[in-house]
Length: 382
Image (cartoon, rainbow, N blue to C red; front, side):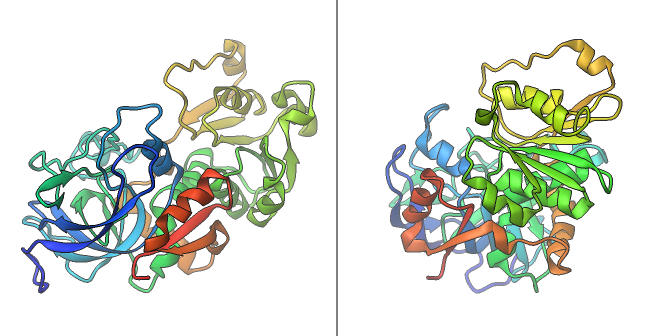
């Protein structure tokens, strides 16, 4: 067990609680129970808002679960550890992650997968795996967890398999964005698409994840990075991430895959789809060059979507791949992504367009709902 002064005790702290769908979060004093076996209690220092939080807060397309503490992109420090936790100790700097790595299952033991059987993302579960209970409560009323992280609280309890220990010199107000969207896009390019130096890469969707995919193409030495988006206002911002050319499908009277094929003498070498639109997915696949082209799907589709393309597109040696969290194993791989930032290979500052204090967290929702900027950092101590 841990040796911090609050170890084993209930901690009372501030949390931003969602009491019902689509209503502003309310600052409440919550009780955070001590970590149980294989759990860790974290002091969150910085968190940021990701579109997934907003989607489940709006609760338009899935089973609503309230009251709940959202938040899953964050950086913090270990406060105490539960029984059986051996690789973390109080004071360690960490990133909590919405998916995990138990290190025991077939996926974790495979070099090819990061889709842990035990800890892969579960948006419906609002309790801890250990005992099926929440670690959060207000006057005895349980408050549900979100994707095992719930970082919109000054303290949270997370399964040890969902905690990446990182370099303590790394600034948590920057690297916290690596615990979800930025790593997803970056890894889609670096780990899955793997563009060669000098190649042509198309990125569909220029939000934070798409721009992270473009950043991966820039790091890889792609000579042309073509950004595709229906919002022309995003094009200027995207230049900072290495995007060299822009295509707005609305400007053309033919399918965008045909436009891209004409621009690139038959198709791009790699494409990364970051919108979740089924039409964008089909375009991203059909725009890659025959013989060697690879398309990577990142965006999450609607549940009734079906992917349709002529089988000849595949027989002509185009490849389609999917990715989850950029194929990064959270505990094993995230520390090295942080090092890419530390050695200035990866730039994170340009992803951070706003910063608010914890008490102003609803402003972060307003920015995202109106499409203003990329990532808003929420400073917990302010």
